[in-house]
Length: 328
Image (cartoon, rainbow, N blue to C red; front, side):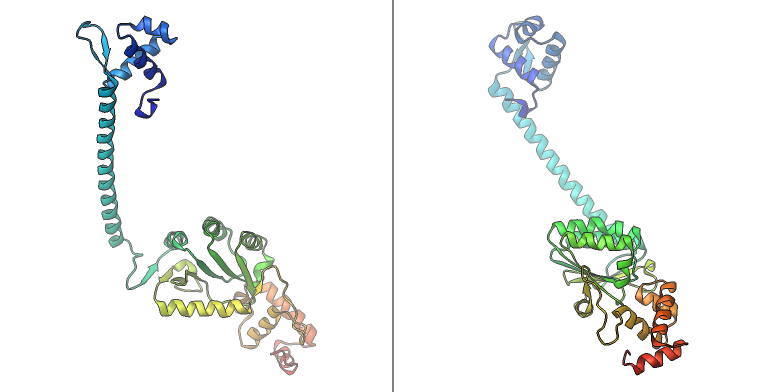
């Protein structure tokens, strides 16, 4: 009953026994309670420390129990004083933490200015994404170009996506069609859809971007090298433009579970048509591969198949024949 006040079962038993018979010694208490004498002595020490026992005036070598009305009131008062001290210390700690955060914000390079924050380095980007993922409450829009995503990127995203989906946040993610051919990326995308996320793919995508609750966006400083850093902005005009770009791309994309259908007129897949368009527009094989998120070998293999289908012996001839057939 008195354990909530800090008494052990043994201490409470000894205290009750002494209240009923304050003249009993250690041996007597041991016999009455069925406790070893060392346990009785430890209980007496605990009771003395809690001021529930005091020196007896009648027996200078003995102890007497303090009445429950006084003793327990003293314990409660002492606990209240300790609680007040802890609350005061907690308030001081919070104030110190707030000052430290403010001072740190002045020192760190990744600090928001006029609604925008330049994030330098992968660690700074990851730290910011963790904060935004924790704060998002409704929706997160993601564009993940480049085809296959790195294992490190997927591993870093999984706990953030898990927490968001557990909180019923809508996750809409765009991958390139080529991501379907990568085991890790495709498995991650299917895991997302199984847990309530929405995933679509498209032959080509705009640069990488993330939009949280349509209020804050994160985009790479240099889309060609995302390791250089990112820009986090809350400017309504910029965020609205990025959301419109996402929605336009999303409307043209295909859900992950659906197959890419060949065009009825040409017999080509959207990826093959996009490859023809890119190469006809003057892009090199390597540049076209980067836009489509596929390897240089895949570009050349697909282009060789297209040339054979067109009956062309050169890229130039293939472009002419594709245009004549209305493919471009």
